[in-house]
Image (cartoon, rainbow, N blue to C red; front, side, top):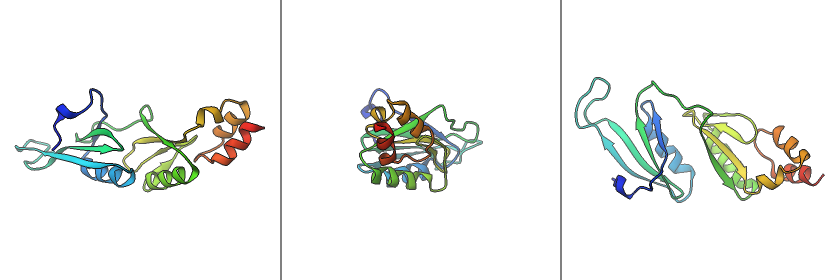
Length: 157
């Protein structure tokens, strides 16, 4: 298991009910340059966790280290927190969108929720320049998954 001392000063810590390892495996399968770093198991029986059960999973997604906790059902993800995935082309947008919405749902304006309830924004790398004009902003606001070519046309009109 990766030592927490090796983590950057700031890193995401995600609370799951009881499927932290499933979530980590799912995310690692989607993002390149990703890997599971380690699993910490409970060493004792508690009212909510038997000895040997997974407590935390550490993993890395394209260089960013995460910790996932099996914390129980008391806390759920909200739209107030999301992860942004910068995409270089439409193929990347389509790929991440397809993988992350599998079992989840589309929201609006490049946002989606995955099957664990975590929010993601799948955006073109040049999104800020594409929405500088009112036409570009209107086009973005009308989309669920981003269509780069349509955004470019709107930005130029």
